[in-house]
Image (cartoon, rainbow over all chains, first blue to last red; front, side, top):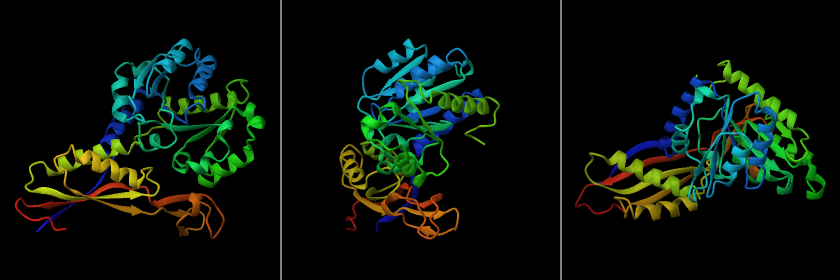
Amino acid sequence: MAKKIRLSARVLSENDRAAADLARQFDKARVFVPNLMSSPGAGKTTLLEETARRLGKELRLAAIEGDLATDRDAERLRRAGIPTHQINTGGGCHLSAVQVAEALTRFNLEDLDILFIENVGNLVCPAEFDLGEHARVVLASTPEGDDKPIKYPIMFHAADCVVLNKIDMEQAAGFSREAFRGFVRELKPDVPILELSCRTGDGMDRWIDWLRQRREAVSRGEDRRCV
Amino acid sequence: MHEVALAEAVWRQVDAAMAGQKGRVSAIQIVVGAFSGADPESLEFALRLAAEDSAWPKADIRIRREPLAVRCKACGREFEPEHLSFRCPACGETDAEICRGKSLLLESLEVTEDGEEDPA
């Protein structure tokens, strides 16, 4: 007789445990951790460069940078004044909590206000891997088309903040902001949608305000992952 | 293709569950929700590939799909969204919570005592 063993175990339980441990560390150090996710080329690194230009003197910023290969993006962030640790996933399409935990040994969390995690450019896989972050920021850009939210509903449904970049290219790309907002609202009615252009600086103030507000709440111990 | 990482995690969990147990794993049952982010066919493929390097290369892999179901926060209606739009067919609101479809579970193992034939 074959015997059945019931487990009902989450396949991602290893990652979940590592993520819970990260969340406790982030809460304890009161460092705000946003996890930036987008398709390749949407402008994650550029957004962080421009953020450093505006916030670098006021807040202590650092970044963990995930890429399949090369440390080109980490170099860009270091040049912008953000201490950055590069994780090369060697073909892996997402960052895992274990990889982030290893990267954390390079930072003293007590000395930071915001630690950005720039995930691997991919709108599917990173959605499933909790990294202990306080907020999931999903970045889209106008040349990608206004229907990205309904094509990648899991990612957009998981978002705590949606950033739309490259609004200066809206006309050339034939992009409708109205349609984009509608698609996001179909999935998540209350999520903030911040429309901006890293190139022209248009709309950057709202992003900086959002970061400041969330960071302040975390530093006061009001915005915690672990209750 | 994060399904490869998922498949490896599944086999590690199977090994952990079998530690100190007699018999061999003749089948594993996985539940894949429509909103889990994993593609059932890719996951099955990745599980078969990874099985070859596991202690249970002959185990049968069974995948149960779990459809997406959400509940409208405004009127309480439960529905299975079409085209993954969360707009409620009853009241038109889009604010809905997911009640089923996010699962990604190693549900059960089937263990056969040594010397026995596979049940299948």
